[in-house]
Image (cartoon, rainbow, N blue to C red; front, side, top):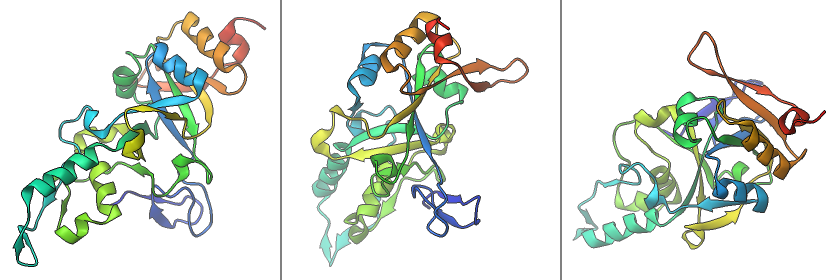
Length: 250
């Protein structure tokens, strides 16, 4: 089942990938996040406003992008298994940019931001950018241990492809992942940023020199925040920090 969100304004439930509530226009998920290590590739992203778009088949979970075809024949004609395998290969050639709707998960910081020494960028979803596009930016579904299943006719529908690309095992649910799906023509290459960067969050172990490097690239064009390790819980608090404090001048 596609993930839904309950509007805090009118309590209407609607698909989570929708940017606004269709009943009252209240914004649903306004921001998405990308965790990054501190390296030349991530700095290039900030400088050139381009992001790497890998092919789906290069993602780190080998159980992804599988589906089960429930039919063995179509119209009395046996289904050609090599054709099914070709369909699977075609889906794996799509480009996928992975994001998250959360910015304070300690595992995300550990796995994707170089053990909390990297940073996290915040993208703004809007009516006019790719992250707010109903058809291309999808929240991942984690509600089943079964791979998506379809009959032959269902497999031809766009919604079925979206389900294949945006379904993962429940083990991954802590990531609260979203996926921007890109045509295979642009996969394994750099694409323009899908949305405006509105803030940067520094990891709790990111040193001052690295922070200054990021701030000197983005200047005052974004807000700056830092992840602070809680003293009494296993968790992080995300708090604002002044630009002047980052670069060391007041």
